[in-house]
Image (cartoon, rainbow, N blue to C red; front, side, top):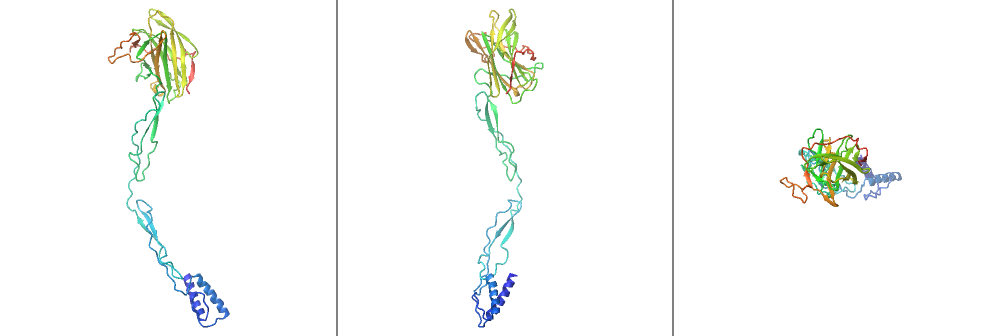
Length: 387
């Protein structure tokens, strides 16, 4: 429509020129003389031609430039598309020249090959545990894995979950001479128990120490675990027992927490022998952990020597997930502190020669498990609540 209007204006403008209209577009005029009304009309036609960039000088038609490079394909595989474009600038249309004919862009298909199958990532095996952050009293260690078995490819999913994990380590108490409590896999009757292998000759004062660390699983209501001190003669004859602690719902009963407690052991051939049980030291620390040391004082010395060993009975088959227990024994002989170690037996199974060969004895396997799970005799005890 614009082209048509332009051609009409040019035709009319030519008539104006032939009749003597003086053009400002560089066009030659005839010798005639225009009337005022026609001159006004010719001036309007010339304004229209100016708007169309018309000139009587030579015009330049537009020409296409070269196409630019193809754009990136819209898909890496499975069929996509890409475009390229050109401009009407070689040359650009001037002085009323014609615009370029045709399209300024074009499109083609690309990457029509079939896409490969996606591969989801898989975890490698965990590496070795790192060095524990503490040598005792619970540290942490870590290990890691990588999403390389296989690595995700072709748009596959990344591995789910964490690339690392941590655990507590070196849970045993600090210091020497600790023994870990581990329970048998089968019960004696309905009782699971751990008993020290050796019993130690009691001196003037006898000090059993127990370290208890709560696990990640809280003990259930009614679960009972005891720590008892058993008494023997040198020939292995069992003569008595006293309770040191007993778990309770939400905590633990600690014997003699309120003060000294007397108890009696009936020694064959000697009668009743009196002892005093007192809490020598107690500590509740982070973890949470509880460490308690009792002092067992002997009041008579004219009876045969007694030997003390530890026993831990329970009716729970999986104590380790609730509590971790360690124990050790020290004794005082005439003012000298002696720590008993489980190194008194050689590879041959015989006791090593000691300065006092009667310091230790093996607890016979035939000793019955002597235990009462009633808390009725613990009325003098306090409950230390698990934190």
